[in-house]
Image (cartoon, rainbow, N blue to C red; front, side):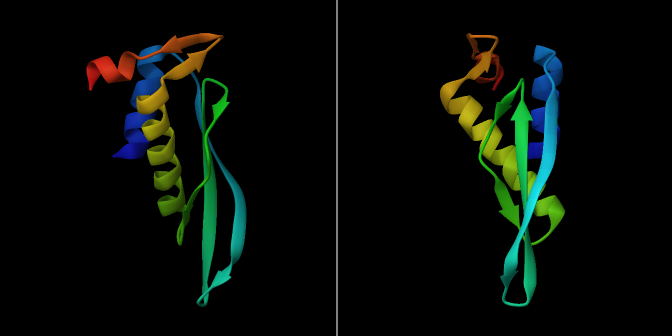
Length: 87
């Protein structure tokens, strides 16, 4: 849900949304941890971490959306609060 929501948000504002696998963290309890970051309109958000790539991507999307909802989205020096109005 978070991943599709962030892509829909980007589509509404006509801004680029990208996800990047940024690292594979150390093994923890015999399992690998994955990390992913989300970038929306050139703004990078903190990494999401999970024991699968999908969980890491979902966590990154959640972090980005939570941050945008709280602080807005900076697009070329302007703040956008569109998602707050829609939501």
